[in-house]
Length: 322
Image (cartoon, rainbow, N blue to C red; front, side, top):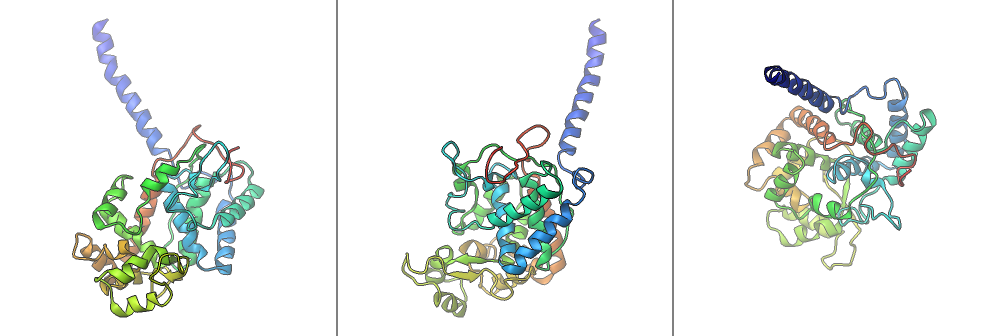
């Protein structure tokens, strides 16, 4: 009997391991909604393209929402939840307050998707698709988005305050913050290339343009003209993160860094005599290399701690729990 039980143990263990590995492998898939919502991709794309045609900056805003969602307890749509008497959401966390935007567009996308397949597609997945469509609409690379995420029933203000790297971050902090969610230093440099589109508020770069020395003087003067030195004056004035082509997804962000024309402190940290310099040089010289690494890193980021199976829910309204 003992021999029998001991010999069956490895078989049980192997079966369990295969089951366990299978469940990990099957978490997300590109064809998750192929039968349950066949019009999903066309519905999201048309709504996102319409929003970007009205305001080009919206593409960067939607991409950023996905970043800020995934970095806080995984890609679970928690950033979309409004505050209630019983839930403190993430919208008023320091990295998001007066900064995260595009929530109305996600509402529009969700509404359009609900019209074609009600109660099927999560807000977390809608964010992931909208991020990809934003990149493509602005001239960037395309990729197949892995899907099957479910929506969180909670949010975390403290995790949002602590998990999203601020624009004051140095290189070591950037590397460690990305490492905390399973992303490599190369992933970090590639994903930072999202700053080839979009704009930043004066409060995010004021200290850099007035106090730092690793900045092109004429670039600093240009930015100072719309961002006064005094705190509280012009705080919300905007400047393009990529001084050359802020509405086109290209590799000029890295070319700017080579010339000390990174807008944020955290941007220029990627090319400042440190370990990331060689990656920045590669991306500035080879747009194809940047795009393939960016796509790989976006897919990897989208895999951060998704809720699957019976975990979480499929929200009817992205702003509130069912």
